Amino acid sequence: MNNCLRFAALVLAAGSAAGALAGTEAAAGPGVAAAPAVAASGEARVRDRTHADALAQCETAVDHSIHEIRGKQVSDLQFGTDARSAADGDRVDVKGTGHYRRTAGAAPVSFHYTCAYDEATGATSGVLFREADNSPPPALPVWQADLSRISPEACEAAAAASMQSSHPRASGIVFDGDSRKLEPGGDGRTALAGTGRVVRAPGMQATTFRYRCEFESSGRLASARASD
View (cartoon, rainbow, N blue to C red):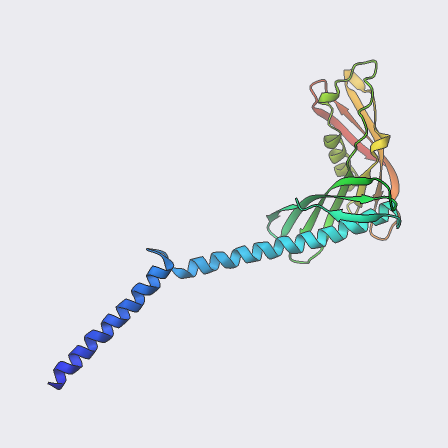
């Protein structure tokens, strides 16, 4: 009789263990283990935290650059909610928009910015902001440049790359939209020239530089250079 009771107890214990295992599998879903889901959730939290850290550090760096370039009279500096980031190893590239007023009560000036954040060191680099040019396009010159094929953004991006190639520690590059001018280039090309300001190394004062790009008739950017 005791042997029968012991056998029955073993059967009940096995059934309880199987039921507990089945309940765990049901909670995780058929054929899906719970551990990977937890890991995926953890990875998502890490990505969100990295994005938040990169965004905060880059906004601080851009804020500093704008005040360094435009002076202490800058007010009402705000960043947009459209910032986005892309990670490549420890490097996180951030792009976003914002606006500020050059003096209290002045019309707001919109800008776009880019910045690189090093997750390993927490440092930022390559800070670049470009003010939006809301002025009307210049009149067509006598050589009939096709403005629809001229991209100031492509020109300025290439000019910024040229400036950073000459001054690797440069930051706070800003282009003066009011200085843009079109002129004849070589071999029937159209040239776009202008000026900007740059901080060539941390702690230095912002200085002026000149840039010039040439476009083919097709709109292809043929050359770009920036000089002190």
